[in-house]
Image (cartoon, rainbow, N blue to C red; front, side):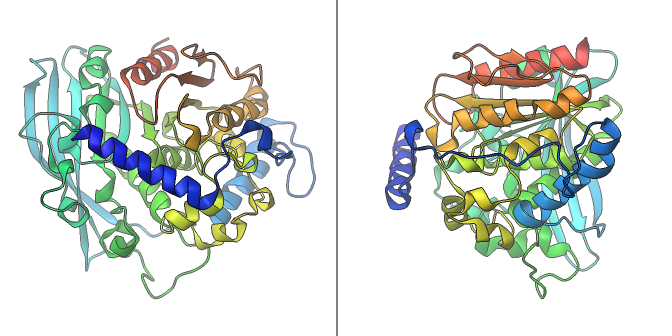
Length: 416
């Protein structure tokens, strides 16, 4: 069944590529000039940390919000937590498992989500934690039959859909390896925050905010902004947990959630490590390379991800006033890791790498280390500076190798 699903997914991508004439030829990448990281909107050169933090960083955050991801509302939504299950002896006694229901409310309407947590039992003190969304429900990350289904899963998957199968994406969540290395992990189904279909926006957390749905502004946030907001609400909860070291929180996102993780990391400084896995267009890849998925393609296929203003750059990628090296730079001085897969041309591995490389000047402004060469490294030769990167063999996925690199990166910056 997994092979059949994989074949169908591949055929869909092939059809989309044919329809949109996607470029996979490096020789056809146009000449481009990236927007300057260290030049303010007024033309002033940024030469100090104070200038970056007080002038240039706010400018870039505003541009990404107004032109790409949408403005995150200031309104506060009430969130309550209910411990649904707790088992101190999961994974043969190595960890404590928890399932926690989040209830988001504006006083008139409620949205529910379920967080799945595993916390290592062996360490006596506080432990660092990885935060990340899963795609197919908490039940998909493990064979454990006690794991509850997502509150909205029936809205996005038919009763006979194979995604109801337990453990269908357990390969993406190396829980034993994470626990053995002394880290906790907290995951939530991304559909709980915004079900990934444009017609299901009424079931998203966006529907709780003032003005919905009467006012739809060109710079209004959509799904990626909502997912980023939800990640921060997970951090709010983790800060209440006695065993969690809230100064050592890493966020890991794959594909569309890699896009959301970078935006969350740019906006919320509590994420001390930000990891983008195969995030591609709207994530780590440079828009101006026009390689693989482009702005026009992503807006056509996923009209509910980005703000309406983003559509004005369809087939005009070079006119966007920002590019993704600037998004990565917004994470400084915190640590960031970008990962690619050799066969994942749709996500433009070279463009992902170059974003990480070109974010370097801001990291160096802080006296930190960055990527020294614009030559993409060999397969399975990770770069472990304050900006990290690797490219591995294989396809668009999260693998055990990826997790080994992320854990090594976290060890370097959290444990040394």
